[in-house]
Length: 71
Image 1 (cartoon, rainbow, N blue to C red):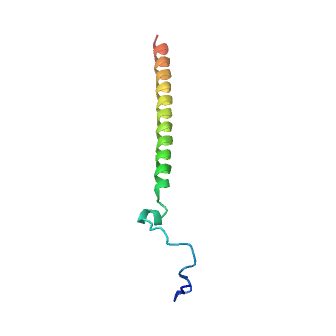
Image 2: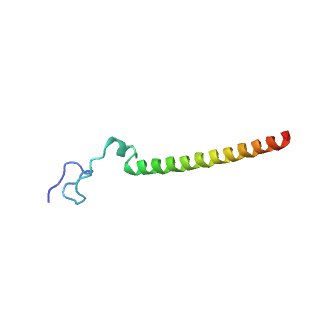
Image 3: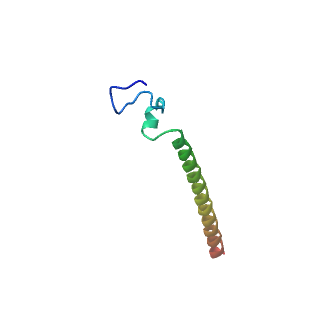
C-alpha cells in the first residue's frame, strides 16, 4: 500500500478524488438555488396578481358606490 507523507491525505484509502466545485457551488449557490429562486419568483408573481385583482375589485366597488351616491 502506498503511504502518503501527509496523515490528512492518506493515498489509497478509498474515497477517490473530490469533485471540482464551481465558485458558486463552493458558496452554496449551486443548481438547486436556481430552482429555489424560480419558485420564489413564481410565488411572488402569483401574489402580485392576486393583489392587483383585489385592488381592481375594490376600485370597481368604489366606482359603483360613487355612481349610486350621485343618482
